[in-house]
Every structure is written in structure tokens, then in C-alpha cells.
Length: 148
Picture 1 (cartoon, rainbow, N blue to C red):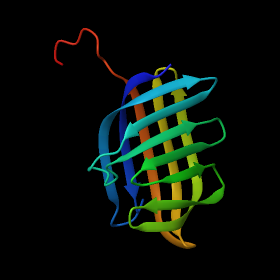
Picture 2: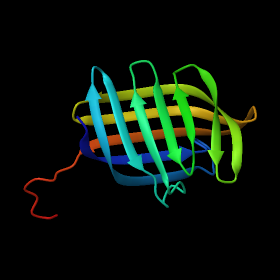
Picture 3: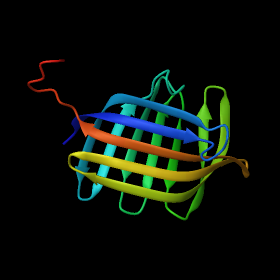
Picture 4: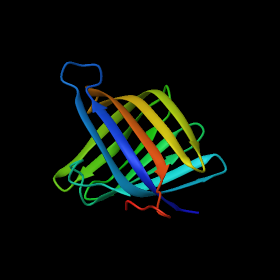
């Protein structure tokens, strides 16, 4: 069953470099957890530069799949210790990107939780950036709230 949740995203591009680029935001989304698999989705916004795109994440015991559909289309598969490539499609063209997943930490249950992915992204086989992506899922407090 899908639940309304708050999804907090903390993304660092250029992780552990002098010119780290950090992005932090919280958005409303949907979440479900069944048989050890967590699924969540949210609409991107102008904050991420991906407005008009829906991001969905499936967190399985051995891998995490991130799908983007809309103005940006991609399917990234993160599996610790594995490298793989994917097609990144935008209104301006497409590129083959690669990810080398260094570490995955996750703790999810039916109430939400946290996922962290440490990975290196490359484009056309040249290292682009070392990134860390953290996502936290919390149920919305929509009953009996006096403040909103």
C-alpha cells in the first residue's frame, strides 16, 4: 500500500573535493515496503534542475534501481562493487553514462528509513565526479496536527 511520505534528499557531487556541490531539499512523495523491498517516488522540481521528471527508486536487498521519466529519462542500477552504464536522455540529446557503485548503506522498513549510495559517475568512460546520495523517507504527520 502506498503511503504519503516526506522524502529528504542530500546529494553531494564532487564528494571529498574542494569544490563539492551540495544539494539538499525535502519533497512530498509516495512510499511502500513489502517483502524486504522498498519503493518510493517523487516529482523533481526546479531545485534539482529536473523539473517535469518523476524519479522512482526500488531498494532491493542486493541493488537499487533509480528510474527517471519525463523530460529526463534514465535507469540507473546501483549494485555495490559493480560498474554499469545507462542512457541519459534529455530534450537536448542523449549520452551514455556509467556508474561505479562503491558503497550502499540502507535501513528501510514499513515506516520509511534511509538509503545512502556512494558512487563514481563517468561519461563516455572518463571519470566525471565522485558522488554521494542520501535519501531519508518519513511518514507525513497529517492527522491531528495543530500547526499545519
